[in-house]
Image (cartoon, rainbow, N blue to C red):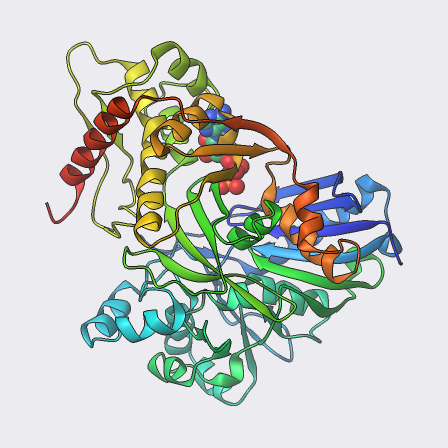
Length: 495
Ligand code: ADP
């Protein structure tokens, strides 16, 4: 077998990262670089495709250098990425015809509303598992085709290629030879039928998108082609690909139905493995492809909360009542559970299961004695309460996890994880390696390259760092959850 390392690229919303692992999934080196966010108008968010690409090549060079490794030392490359972000480029020159429109961008809200008014949502959701929302790629592609002069004609003539970030990076890494994505990324476009595993002609017609722009869709562990870019200094096969939340589920070895991971970074994303069943949510959750390996589709139920770790940044940067996020743990320990003050961090509306874009945040229940410690603790608690809302929705849809595996920057906070286990009344497990996303991409590459033998072998590599078991009395939990639902009711826009 060629090489002794795996190289994983994690192209995220605010930064790009490359990590090199040995064949036992131990990190050998890593490099990370932020790149600029572009806000052309309120509600619009773009990335410069060249800035994405430059950051990826630069961190890849750095990681190789730090590991003292050359292309011949790398067995395979895995890619994971910010999902839904949309690019369209010229097949001859590789140049994008417009900036990348980022998943957070809301410019197509009215367009989506129009399609909903025509009664399309149910059909879209049955086929794709998603909602008619600007979040997903479909309406972003339509916007570029309709608003950038000359682009529609070029697309119809087969001159342009669409891709999410994974696909764009693959195109560039292979020197423009391969136009492909994986099933998890395809499942976030609004164009992919998750039941038939095909691009859907009715959906393409609804959004007026020519089929000629679409990439081939492969398994998450597959032969994606040979990367030949200079940043590697030689040829390396690309063998793994998955969207970031799905990669995190793989990194957490969530291969069995019912296994659930919750990632706490800027926002919080919960994904539960539902096996070979595409469970249609009656509770506003998304149905998605969790992974596709060896031709077998595994579905997932997904819910997200827009504000998680970023609520700590709000305490630090706007309220200025903490100096750094970890201080929230000391404060909460000292203060203990708060049951009278509630913070609802609906700064950008409420995500699942409410989907209320017009809700705004609030601090409720203040009395003359309320102070900084109450607000900091209540803010931490709000992230756990929001997770509870997602897990409740999943339970109503028939998925009741017995344990939740957590990852992301915020899970360094033990107090938060204990409170989370308490209000969920479910055990919470933190792995040794909380960088599940990039690790998942490496596992996929390793699986295809024959280094990791099976999903079970990935399960064996998963190591628990800490277990948080529910300890709170039922009466206190119920009081807290009822206080929270009261608080949410008061911030909702239809109130
Ligand atoms: P992302 O990948 O979305 O950039 P990370 O996974 O790096 O995010 O997590 C960073 C987030 O975690 C920040 O929003 C930060 O406020 C939060 N965070 C980091 N450490 C702690 C802590 N000890 N307690 C609470 N929140 C924390």
